[in-house]
Length: 130
Length: 117
Image (cartoon, rainbow over all chains, first blue to last red; front, side, top):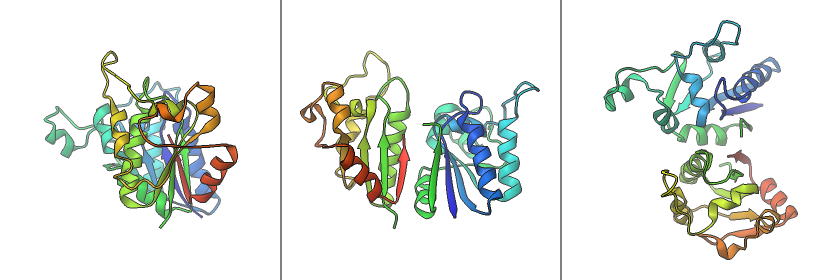
């Protein structure tokens, strides 16, 4: 079965972000596939490369990066949510004349259409953090 | 093409969830057949005469007027949640179909995908 996963919760303010990662790993371990992970609302904070968590706390953002890169799964952060929260890639940083970009490796900033497209084409959509 | 149901359960103000949910619904309706169901405090999103002047936030409730133009198929709400909040559908900005529990269950079952906001 093909899953779309949607993450609404931020990495250190909500359990949703880690629960989604554990679920995503379980999906693959069970022989299913994931067509895309879409980060929306505060979930886009996961894509912030400037996160520096205490050493005794899980590096949630890096764990997602490793999961996405290692399994060749798209990690998409919603552009409207990102811009409101200061998550920028080089293109957006240039467009809005900001001092730097901070999108973490493995994440891509894109539009809400990616959420709809992933939902339409998946067998199941599972949302975390509502 | 999959049909999609958007379920809105958050109050309109106090967090950006309702506004970002509406953005997703409008985007979805550009791609495929979409309906929306307001439940819990989500029914408050539809109340007419909202003003956000004192809050300093955007009054996105005006965008609900565009749902018909975007081709949103069914606009429904939970009848019990409406009654529990002392509301009547005449309090709403737009025409909404109140559903009982069985009606909501049927609506959810009728759609291929459900997104919660």
